[in-house]
Amino acid sequence: MKIPASPSVAHQPLALVNGRLVDGETYDGARGGVLILDGRILDIGPDVEPQSLPVHSRVIDCGGDLILPGLIDMRAFVGEPGAEHRETIATATAAAAAGGVTTILARPDTSPPVDDPAVVDFLLRRARDTGRVRVLPCAALTQGLRGEEIAEIGLLQQAGAVAFSDGARPIVNSRVLRRAMAYARDFDALVIHYAEDRDLAAEGVMNEGEYATRLGLSGVPREAEAIMLDRDIRLVNLTGARYHAPLVSTTLSLDILARAKDAGLPVTCSASINHLTLNESDIGDYRTFLKLAPPLRREDERRALVEALAEGLIDVIVSDHDPQDVETKRLPFAESENGAIGLETMLAAAMRLVRAGAPLQRVVAALTSRPADILGLPQGRLKVGAPADLIRFDPDEAYLVDPLKLKSRCKNTPFDEATMEGRVKLTLVEGRIVFEQD
Image 1 (spheres, rainbow, N blue to C red):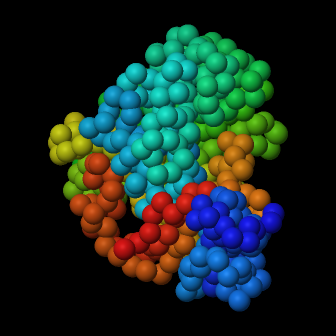
Image 2: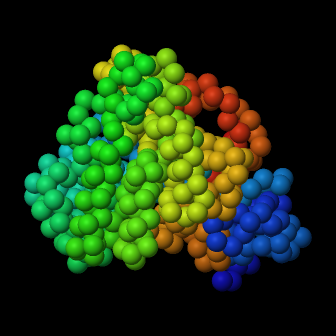
Image 3: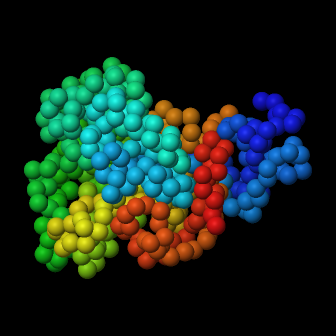
């Protein structure tokens, strides 16, 4: 790619220099830089230095900070349409940019749900007009998210949907899910299905066990997740559809997924940053910001999830960003809504895993290249020709999480007043600066 001799501002090269390059495939912390032109990575490596750049380049000295691909979050609720009191695309993408997330896969369980090409088009236009980062629609698997009739997967995909899910609603009818999977297979579409047996989970509000008993709260057994996941995997074997389990939280589920992958089935999975870094005891004195679905599990389960991530059994880390306002969270634990925000704190929380021994490259891969591979995206890697979705990240800068300073419209963070280490200083989307630390 040739650099214009007298470029306009729009075509001015931008260089990040004096950084440590890390991605999930090639770079493991080597010193170097990245040269960007027209939204793409033009050059990368140790030779990208100030003295080797065109004289008209804009240069940002990273001062030894990490240069990472922008994060890709495969599970986030962005509010629009219908829940703007909880979040908007503008506020969600502002939080994402501050957290180093450059691509969001938006959940379809909005009002109206994303079950019509017109709603897909609305999301894409709204993201273009008000969003700071890339927002990709995940469309509904069934009409109205009712789990009864499959949605028009082909038309929704043609409109711009990149995956299909009923959000937080599991499809109970196995025949309907089988038909949806078979239909999705014909379009090579990704099926994302939240696995929970709602009848078995019943009125449970936290993980079933001794801790729930001591708190006097009804529990959700691990089997509620495993039974539904086992059924889903059997349907994958029957149909050949590409399948992604969005929220894995138990060793029972890990065993099921390990067998499916060993059998060569087209199956992948995610775990939320909350389930990887927190456990049921963090609920403490009925902290409703930690009421999640699926619920936080025991510490041994959390450790098993981290080990599965390190080994590659868990493919992706997600924020599971789910804003809830004061009226739905400032209630007794059993009555409050599930959900926590996470776009802005996901990367800093993930660094806790690295400090505990998880390989940095594997954690970065789970946040970047693996979700890109699953969704068929060119982003998520440090590679010449790839879109210049990049972040500058200081892994050692400590700060206290102040909910009032978070950019999400709602403030229900599970890391309220926690000390975090790791601060995003700069976020680029296709070479454009969408966030810069003050």
